[in-house]
Length: 85
Image (cartoon, helix red, strand yellow):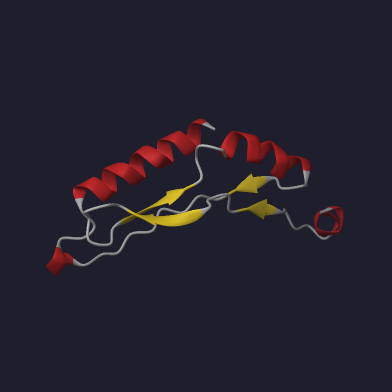
């Protein structure tokens, strides 16, 4: 990490673990990994990471009504939890 910093590059991490399909939502998704993020964030920082980026992937398909209100609400809640960490 120090060699990157010396070149003006700020090391970061994408801390989500995997994409999880919401049951019954026909393919709408959320990310997993918030439950253990506080502990992992400390480890990432100690390893040199100075920022983190969380994903909230949506599939937009108006004909199929996606993303659903459930998927939007679940991802908004996850982003709010992420901001608290």
